[in-house]
Image (cartoon, rainbow, N blue to C red):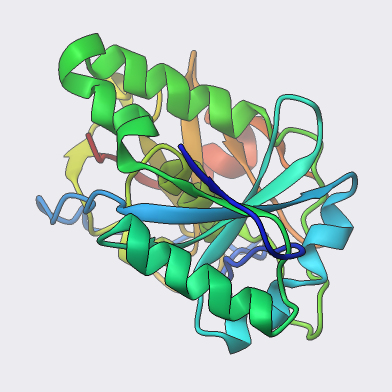
Length: 252
C-alpha cells in the first residue's frame, strides 16, 4: 500500500431507488441469461476514520458533487473508512487525492493497490477464498443503519449500494442499480446458490428486480432492508422473501 499525507476525510456513495418493501404480490420474472462479468477495480483512494456511519454518510454529497463513486466500510477497529475512485495508476489516484486535499475535502489518505483486493488472490487462494471474503465483508455491516442522510434525501446506503460496496471492497466493480446488477454474471438456481452470490427480489409488483442482497449460505442473505432499519440477515424461506424472490446470480 502506498501512503500519502495531506487531507481530511472522505465518504460514501451508493444509491438507487427501488429498495422499498411493499406487500403487493410479485409478478413472475423471466430469468436473464448470462451477462457481463464485473470489471476488476484499479487503484483506489482511501481516506477518513469515522466512529459513526452517520458521519460518513454526511459527506456523501461532497463526493457526489466531485463525480466520485465512493463507499464506506467497517474497519477492524470499528471505525468507518472510505474508499473512492477507480484509477489505472497510483500516480493518477495520488493526483486526484492532492486536488481534493487542496479543496479541503480530505486530509490523510493512502492509495490502495489492486493487488490487495481479494479478487487478486483468486488464482492463488481459490474462488472459495473470494466468496468467504465477500461474506465476511457483508457481515461486517450487520447492525449498520440503512442511511438516507447526508446533504440530500437521496444519499445513503441502499440495497444496491450495499452490494456494490461489498464487491468493490473485494476488487469488483458493480453498477449502482439492483436491476443492472441482476443482468450481470451467470444465473444460479436457488438450490445451487453459493456464498457470495447475489440474490434478487421483486418488491414493488413491477415485474422487475427492485431489491438485492448477498447470499451467505444455509438459505440466508444479508441486505439493507429499508429506511429506518439496519443492515441484517434474512431467510429466503421467509414468507415475504420467498414470495418475492426473483433469482440469483454468480459474479465470480
